[in-house]
Length: 82
Image (tube, rainbow, N blue to C red; front, side):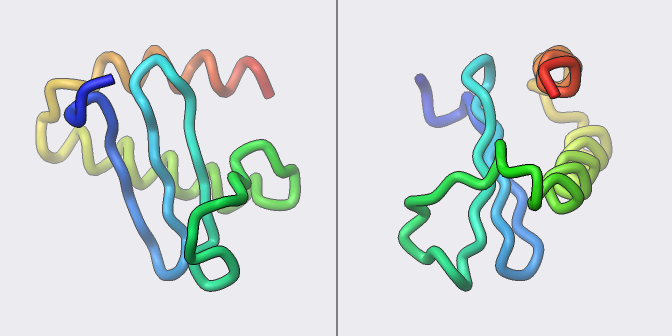
C-alpha cells in the first residue's frame, strides 16, 4: 500500500482512516491514543462512523481529490456489508 492510498479525517478525539480497497479504521484517541482498538465494526460507534464518512466524502469532493471515485466505490461496499 502506498502512503497516498489512504485518507484520514479527525473530529475532536475521533479519527477515521480509509485505506483504498482495504477497509476503514475508527479510533477514539482520548480512550485509545495508541490506536490499538479499531471501532469501525463496533455497533455502538455507528453514528460516529457515518458522521466521519460523510465528512470525508464532503472533503474529497471539495478538494477534487483524485481518489474520490475509489472512495465512493469502497463506501458503497462498506455500507452494503453493514
